[in-house]
Image (cartoon, rainbow, N blue to C red; front, side):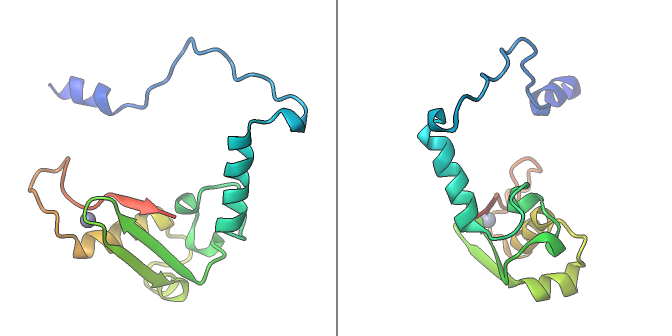
Length: 122
Ligand SMILES: [Zn+2]
């Protein structure tokens, strides 16, 4: 049983997947690709190499950080200055956001797999 669970949660790696098609001239990029790029720029003026939740607090260029829960629909906001003070500049926003949600989450089922909030970062 333990083995099965381990396999189920392991990231799926397609060994025989064909390589991504070579990117042609800029004009040939699919519109969705550009939409995603523009979305990124609009959402955050900071370094765009990582999604915001993968960055350290010190690498995020916003003044207010926001995380929402896709289970209970709550939105938690924290000033970046407060987050830095509480968790330190090296804390990753994903971890901080999860903790913020968990502190006030109403979804307590008692089962480890289901308990807690599902953070959704913007
Ligand atoms: Zn929740």
